[in-house]
Image 1 (cartoon, rainbow, N blue to C red):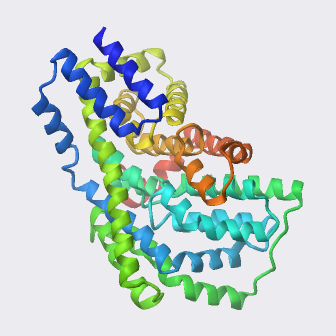
Image 2: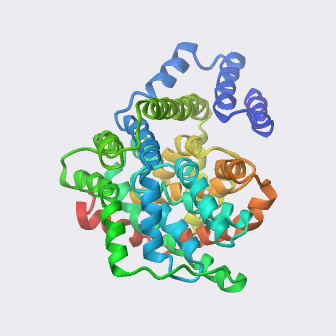
Length: 429
C-alpha cells in the first residue's frame, strides 16, 4: 500500500511540473522513511556511485565542445556550407536547416544544445525567406533531435555506460538512422515547399562551393578526428570528448578567432551548469532505481514483455509504444537510466542486437523532446521564436510522424543500425 501511495505522489509531482530529478529523489526518500526497507547510507551510496563512471566524463566535454563551436562562429560557417550544398532545391532554406543540424550533430551530441545554438540564426534566415515563424520554429526544433543520433551522442554515452554496451559501436550504429531521420525531414520540407510555394535558393557555383568547403573544413574535421580516433583505437569515446573540446578551443582562438577569455569563461560556466543538471537527474534516477529493484518492478516488466510474444517485431512495437508514452511525460535521461537495463535484458532474451536496442531507445526518446507536455525542445523554441506551444505543435506534429516513420524503418530493417559497427569493428561476440 505504501508503494502505491509513494508512486502516486511522484506522478502528482510530475503533473505539478516539479523537476523530475527532485520528484524521483523525494519519492525514494519517502519510500525509505515509510517502509524502512532501504537504509539511508545505501541510498546515498547508490546515488554517488552512479556518477562514478569513466564514460560519463565525456558529457561535460561534449557540452563544452558544442558551446565553443557556437561561440567561435563555426556554426555560421556550417550554415553557409549547407546553403551552398542544398540551398538550390525547392524549400532550400528548410533543407539547409536540416543539413546544418546533421553536421552540428557530429560536434555537440545534444539536441537542446543544437536547438539553442543554431536556433536564432536559422530562424532569422527562414523568416527572411518567407517561411512562417511557427513552421520555422518547428523545423529547427525537429532537426535538432538528429543531434543525439549521429555521433557523438550524450544519450549513447549514458546508455552504453549503464548497460555495458560499447559506446563506440553505439556511435557508429547511429550514423545511418541519423541520416535517415534527416532525409525524412527533408522529404516533408520539400512536400510542404511545393504545397505552400516556399522558394528555392540561388544555385551555387563549384568555385563558391569549394570556397565554402575551405572555410568550413577545419570545423568539419572535428567529426573526422572524433570518429577516426575512436575507430583507430587512439582514444576511447571519453578521451575523444576531451580531444574534441581541445580542438574546439584551437578553432576558437586560431582558426575562427572570435573566442575571448570572457566568452570562454561563460562557456565553461554554462557547460558546468548543464552537466550538473544532467548528473543530478542521473543520480536521482539511481535512487529511484533502488525502489524499483526492491519491488522487483524490472523483473516484472521483463517477464511481462517476454510473455506477450516471441516475435521480435511485436515486442519492439510494444516497447516503442511504451517509450513514446513515457517520453511525453518524463525526461529521456531518466527513462534511459530506469528502463535501459530492462530493455537490454529483453533484447538478450529475444536475441536482439544490444546496439540496435540502444539506438532504437534513444531515437524514440529524442522524439519525446518534441511532444508535450515535457518536451524540452518545445520550450527552447518557444523562447527563441516567441510563439505558443499550440503554434509550435501545429507544425511539429508532421515532423513527429516523419520521425516515427524513420523509427519504424530501422525496426523493420535492424541491419541499418548494425551494418557500420559490424563493418568497421567486427561482429560483436
